[in-house]
Amino acid sequence: MNKTFKNQNILITGGTGSFGNQFIETMLKKFTFNKLAIFSRDELKQYEMSQKYKDKRLRFLIGDIRDSDRIEYALKDIDVVIHAAALKHVPVAEYNPSEFIKTNIIGSENVIKASIKNNVKKVISLSTDKAAAPINLYGATKLVADKLFSSANNMIGSKNLIFSSVRYGNVLNSRGSIIPLFKKLRSQKKPLTITNLDTTRFFLSLEEGVNFVINCLSIMKGGEIFVPKIPSVKITDLANALYPDAKIQIIGMRPGEKIHEVLISSNENNVSEFSNFYVIHPTINLNKKINYEMYNKMKGHKTKENFQYESSQKKFLLNKNSLKQFLKKLDC
Image (cartoon, rainbow, N blue to C red; front, top):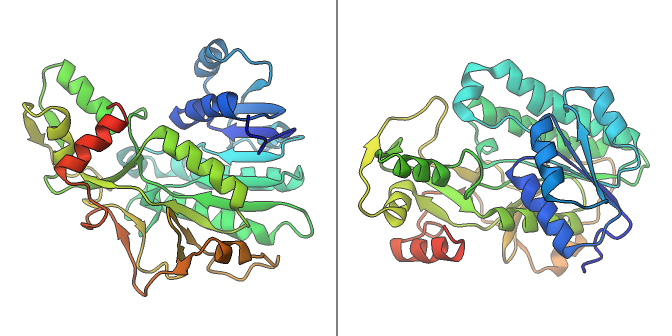
């Protein structure tokens, strides 16, 4: 068993979601730890999870990150926080901006303040490709959250505590994602709905997402945004690979939707590239002196000026044969 989390108490916000379920499975199979707390609002999902994972090291805490007192209490004696709680649906955000601001921005700030007060050691926040050059409310709230987590390293004083973020694309087979939608439409014998023929998206598996976050926890120094190197897919190619005989219906762009997604904007110019990930370094000078020498030892290099990591770029886009192999590997 891996000893990365030996004797540590871990808490994941929004822990009953797709990421949380995979994270718990991975932790129980591969790691030794003292306690893992699942913090979320949904009592039914928590009950179902407690029946599925019968392990005495798991704790289930009902609460909302909007409630500063509750999250402060939940983080007592916690060493590591994975902040996965968020409202995520792009069109819903356009119609309910205040609710997304309360959860994604104010809720994130509550997690930061509670972590500092409770002397947590490491806090890592899950972000999204929609935070890079955002055009929708959801992406804008996650960009603010990214900035909050970076600048939080200036609020810790002499405490041994660091904050960082992870930014990645769509998770295959997660709740509300496109493959479950295609499967549902197929079972109902309906056309597969696509917003635009040219639409492309970044994809990774749940397992890849969880493993990447765990790896980032082991190397984070504070203030960075970690971005994995993952493939992108043209959505029409994805539909044809899954169901070659299916009819496709173009329904038009949804509110706040992009045709192509960006994981690193050309305006984010302080970026280092490594073999399988990128690091976006803080844009501000952090009061705490952070030693980034480790990254030099990992043989990274600064990206070229105006570098952009976009889902439409050919070097990231899977062709039809590569896509079939990709889906087969992920059992989709």
